[in-house]
Length: 237
Image (cartoon, rainbow, N blue to C red):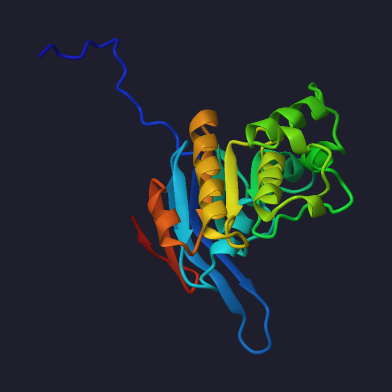
């Protein structure tokens, strides 16, 4: 075996996409505050699909909201692609949020807007270098709804509404997709199809996916599983 020459630099490990250190969040209640996230630390590599599991009230949704900058932490550090997220404000915070896709359990589609307009909604306040409607149409086609661009949410099934919500989450080409119980309001067959879609999009687009779920079968399909209980990380499989 030949020795490394002096001109050869040692290989370096790629920087993780997400680093969380000693993250804390509590909410005021009568009496003692409710601790939702309690000194959680984890590192997630780019392109990984991670399931967040644990009982109701374990802190899954709050952890996603902190990573997505929907909620502010009480302490600790969040870094995404080398950028420190905790402490961001104003335009910097808005720019960070545009790098993150979020899929909610209850879809959160605007009832008066068509599927196409719902997908474009996150971009409406901003100028873009691309055609917003064209990208929205491409994404609706990607999630299997090319023929439903003019449909209102009330004219779509639950699975179709979640597909619109996924297309909306992808409109900014996020590096990180956060999904909070994305199958919670769907029947098992439709839920399986939604998870199939999320994982295929992860593979095709190289995104990192973090998905909160109560379903052990869904969690088993992810690369890693994070178990939370009472706001603490109890196991990292």
